[in-house]
Image 1 (cartoon, rainbow, N blue to C red):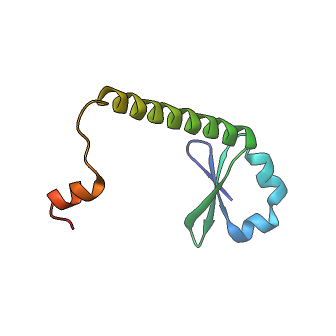
Image 2: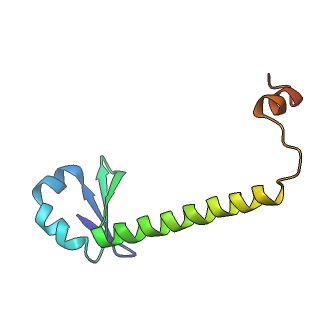
Length: 93
């Protein structure tokens, strides 16, 4: 287990099996990146941190979908073509 800058800990898969209890303590204060053959393969997060990320992602998705809906409403009376027609006009079909 190696702790690097930014409160990040690197843990090999084999080491994870041996030091699970210690790693579970580390996730309260550090990011834990799981590695296999020195390549990142996953991240172990504190559950509260995971929930924060999920909440942010959900809010971002809601914002994006809301923006798309507003854009569609603004161009409600504009002519819209089908995907097939757009492909035909671009010479893709």
